[in-house]
Amino acid sequence: MTPTTDTPPATQHVTLRCQWCETWNRVDAARFADRPTCGSCKKPMLLDRPIKLDDATFARTIADSEIPVVVDFYADWCGPCRAMAPAVDEVAHELSGRVLVAKVDTDRSPVTSQAFRVTSIPTSIRFRGGREVQRVAGAMPLAALRTFCTAP
Ligand SMILES: [Zn+2]
Image (tube, rainbow, N blue to C red; front, side):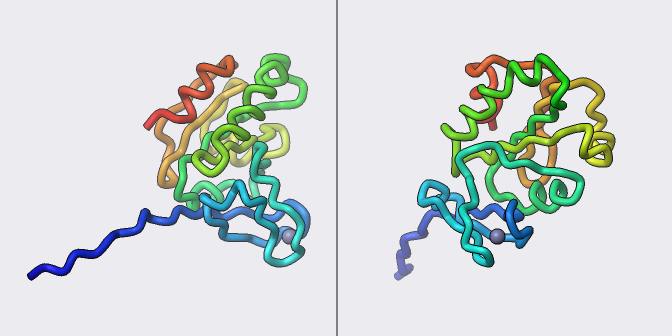
């Protein structure tokens, strides 16, 4: 007889650097809604809004995320980026724990921006398993951004 075992759903983690003390934390994506705190400084991880990434944190965060990551490459002086920012905030809130929504300031993160050949902003890139799967150059309204974030 073959024993039957219930396979629990795989737990998906993300690895994020605390914005306060810079300690890396591995967080269960299913627990995002529980407002997890940093294991080191105990301050909130703020996971219901876009995560700010830079040249120091980008590669590890993308590589270690077990849920899809959508990155908005932007600059403060870019009008279309500012127009799109509320939609980015909204999808980060709506999809918290399902999709990691992140932002990269291209002026402050030139290495990352050049590595991904981001030549116009805003540019949105979706990563899965650490690899780029899709990108869109240009601002997207909320509905289009939501569709982009949740595509396979
Ligand atoms: Zn901390």
